[in-house]
Amino acid sequence: MANKFNDIDMQDWKNCDINIDTLWLIDRRDKSGKHKNIYHGNFIPQIPNQLIRRYTKENEVIIDPFLGSGTTLYECDNLKRKLIGLDINEKVLEFTLDNMGNNFNNKRFYITVCDNTNSKSLKYINEGLKSLKSKTAQFVIFHPPYMDIIKFTDKKEDLSQINNMDDFLNAFFKTCKNILPFLDKDRYFAIVIGDIYRNSEVKPLSFNVMNLIQNNFKVKLKGIIIKNIEGNRGKLKTENIWRYRALKSDYYIFKHEYIFVFKKEF
Image (cartoon, rainbow, N blue to C red):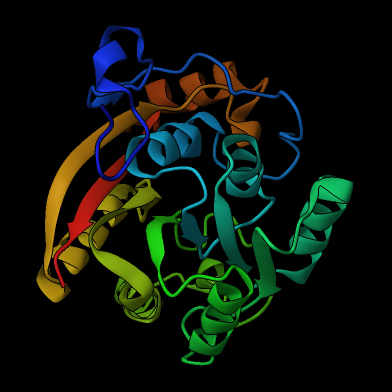
């Protein structure tokens, strides 16, 4: 017996390794297969792996509007899901496609350069759905830049170029407004995001994004997951330096990020 939105066998639920807790402590990232931690800012494969298995079935369509170096793509390949992957960064998409090599199947995957804040993105998503022989998507995973803490391109449309909170929220709203209509009603989407430190104080980017979704879309918030951050590339081999700086000052080092899970009701 399986759920209507995943392939979990509830008759064998005791052997299921899906994490249903709101605290995800992951000691190291999965570097198997095509997963390579060479792209600053990519998220660990365990996140899309868990979310995809929890909220989709085999051969269903997932949209990732911030595909980056392809973490979601590789998991969709492993888990036999279809994917529409979008990103504004041409160079990283070239790397992703090269990394897929002969495994790339245009009947299962549609990857293209796209500015998600622009209404032209609707055309690309429609093209993607047509190529995958589907009318809608069944899951969306958003992993946007955390404002401008890592600048991925020099394009002014890139969310990683935005250093103002209101401007970022407005741009992310445009992305969601373009993407979410393609998601089936009563299906799920997730946002993976962290906070930032600016002008000597914490700026709660994550909860501002959560409030943005709740205030502008008919959704139910199904989970607030806290995931630890270990082995961050930006702080690799410099933990003592960061600890020294924190002790000398008055702040705490970010060691977590959030995963917000929503159910779409429109």
